[in-house]
Image (tube, rainbow, N blue to C red; front, side, top):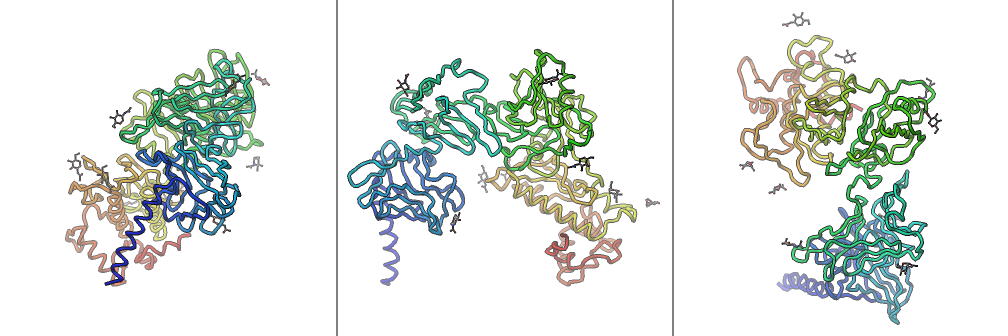
Length: 635
Ligand SMILES: *[C@@H]1O[C@H](CO)[C@@H](O)[C@H](O)[C@H]1NC(C)=O
Ligand SMILES: *[C@@H]1O[C@H](CO)[C@@H](O)[C@H](O)[C@H]1NC(C)=O
Ligand SMILES: *[C@@H]1O[C@H](CO)[C@@H](O)[C@H](O)[C@H]1NC(C)=O
Ligand SMILES: *[C@@H]1O[C@H](CO)[C@@H](O)[C@H](O)[C@H]1NC(C)=O
Ligand SMILES: *[C@@H]1O[C@H](CO)[C@@H](O)[C@H](O)[C@H]1NC(C)=O
Ligand SMILES: *[C@@H]1O[C@H](CO)[C@@H](O)[C@H](O)[C@H]1NC(C)=O
Ligand SMILES: *[C@@H]1O[C@H](CO)[C@@H](O)[C@H](O)[C@H]1NC(C)=O
Ligand SMILES: *[C@@H]1O[C@H](CO)[C@@H](O)[C@H](O)[C@H]1NC(C)=O
Ligand SMILES: *[C@@H]1O[C@H](CO)[C@@H](O)[C@H](O)[C@H]1NC(C)=O
């Protein structure tokens, strides 16, 4: 009984202690806060606007951060070592007896250190402004978070000569000529995008002559910089909580807090059209704004990393400069790749411009302005963008054999594809190995150009009068079943968004020259939101015989409908007959459910040859037939 009482009381004490701890705004030497207490705040400013503690940045990954305490979601304004979070177990922050505020990882490695070394009596305080301060025993300020910004400036926090805001590859900083700029500083190239390098800084009201290099957001929503930049929030005036954040998309935005519901509204932003930010679509990628931001690869190129646009696109062809190859140009209307000009010629014809690019092996594309006859050839393709305001066209150089006969249709990427489910398709093309080479959309002409898959679809090899040379051997069937399963697993789990195909059947499984399976026809596919596991279609889709019972029952549709169809296909691959159009056993029609029961019994008995396609004459791997785990035999 006594033990039980203890168990009840102990959590109560912890709760009392922690509620006490969460109200404090000062920390003294010898204190240590373990990451396991991340649910509690470490320090809170006296006005309760800001809190400081462990912030969960990912699964089991934490940063030591300061955030707005009154916004709907924690809005982080500062982090110690933001690029390198610590483990969710065993990490801690300590104000040690030497007077250093130290963040240590699970294995004891120092992740971040204030390096104040101010001895006993050192205190850490979180001020009302959101500034975290370390003071020595005499009260002297030794370190402050305001001097080490991450991606956000709070009111009264200055940006100076030695500091910059960083968000991914994007930087806000004072350049060597005293001008405040935004730069994409990627692994391969760096490129300034604000203020636009097309203009003289004096023409846009800035100056290079004030070398104090200081910018600050005041308490009324003015952001003033020593280079004469002067910005005013749309809701300027006192009493509103604001922040200036360099967002992950490279745009610098001022936000105002709505205290009634804790939401943030943008009260000013630097870049009106996101395509003006450099680096978002990576090397060879092209940015489009219509009016939502989107990236695409030029014809003859594909995404390098299907999950990350900033990794850009890679060519689908290998260029060999010591070989004379036949190239052609594909026109991308009102498109340019900013910078990296190889040659610039004025008043020449498009034909001459193309010839110039053809003569230079390293030339990848050209941009041509018809009015002035200006020709820019490019050997590096960065900062691609497509805009109806751009007064020129880009021409991508691709091997002749890759250009489709219909290229005179003038593929225009600035039209959103509107084919039945083509928007879904477009998204899939970006993320799935069913590879699309390009699309055209002009008036009623709509074309999707796909990789050519040589050996037709699976049904041609299974059903009906199949010639002996077409009959699939067991190992080919196994490889196809395995490949299809992997394709589905990829669709369902690894894609950016979850995708349910909805129409898995042998007709939609295409076979390459080497009998690799490729899932095709996303005509019925639906993207489901990643955080949701079911869809609700109002109309039935799919093909009778392969359709899961959910369709008929009007139950929510999940990725399991594809698994059901796959099961039917798998039985068809193994038996070599159209299970989907009815099953006859000894001349008697049986239901699929009964058949599956029978198959289960046969599997349990261990003698599977009765259900294997008789045309294989007993040539099959019985271990694989019984149990798919033997897939390793494939590789
Ligand atoms: C400690 O852990 C961190 C993060 O997990 C890791 O980067 C570092 O290499 C580890 N150090 C040692 C000495 O094991
Ligand atoms: C330079 O900018 C600062 C503000 O950051 C201002 O106080 C100072 O007067 C400016 N100097 C000149 C010469 O304009
Ligand atoms: C703040 O949020 C409330 C509730 O959503 C809304 O009614 C109000 O208009 C918002 N105020 C501003 C200034 O956006
Ligand atoms: C380029 O082409 C030449 C001539 O055809 C050939 O000898 C060479 O191996 C090729 N180089 C590459 C990298 O393909
Ligand atoms: C274009 O300019 C380059 C030098 O930049 C020159 O070598 C070339 O001949 C010019 N092309 C034409 C067609 O004038
Ligand atoms: C099956 O195909 C072979 C050759 O392709 C043909 O000779 C035969 O008549 C066909 N049988 C039927 C029933 O269609
Ligand atoms: C598969 O495609 C290859 C390449 O086109 C061809 O040689 C082969 O005959 C095809 N196989 C069948 C069974 O059609
Ligand atoms: C899916 O979304 C709906 C509506 O947004 C929601 O009601 C449902 O709970 C979600 N289901 C899951 C499993 O998250
Ligand atoms: C699916 O949607 C229809 C109409 O939108 C609705 O009547 C039905 O209840 C929904 N079914 C489920 C299972 O959510």
